[in-house]
Image (cartoon, rainbow, N blue to C red; front, side, top):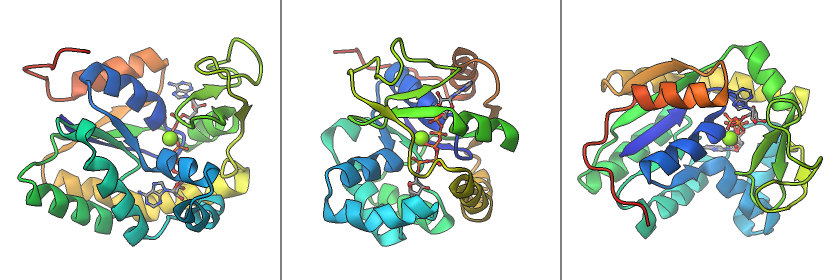
Length: 223
Ligand code: AP5
Ligand code: MG
């Protein structure tokens, strides 16, 4: 199963991707998480990406596409993947199509998570993530950790993302509308898009997403 998740910042892409990837037994590939890992390890890629991310802008395509390609070529992604935050503009979508065509494979679905602006702003304002792994995501009211400031998964310190300030969120929303939303029409022309509401409890959204995805005929056994 090869799926692209799309939706505004704070819609719950990462939250849903973690759950869907487990159910579908494919890796969750988040370009945002890959950049944040590079930033915390202070790699050259991380240093380059940081200024764009902190400003709420997109990291340049040549860097992003190369990083996403490397990740998709890892052995665990051979059977499929769930892409979260990539592609994020039409040039990246075209590059992904080229990569997949060269491998003789194609996407199965594009899942569009829809949420109104006032809701995503609330979700982002209360989000706390783990220093050890930015895929460990919490919320001060909706998903409180057992102990304040401590990650339930690994015990790491929870903090607020540098790009989760009110001003940067505004820029990220603008970037989403102008640069990312056009990929929905791009994929709609290929008959791949299903739009679901991202409102409601996390479990409800996961159920909605599973029902909207093409049904797996032969799920691989878990290990
Ligand atoms: P990225 O990390 O992808 O950020 P984003 O797209 O802005 O999305 P978020 O991670 O903010 O939100 P989400 O939808 O994952 O929501 P979450 O599940 O955390 O990208 C960051 C930056 O990296 C970009 O701005 C760009 O600079 C760069 N970048 C990344 N990819 C790139 C690319 N392809 N090209 C160029 N640059 C790129 O949920 C949010 C909160 O809500 C959490 O606290 C969660 O607990 C809570 N929540 C989730 N679901 C619910 C629910 N149902 N009810 C209540 N609360 C909920
Ligand atoms: Mg995310």
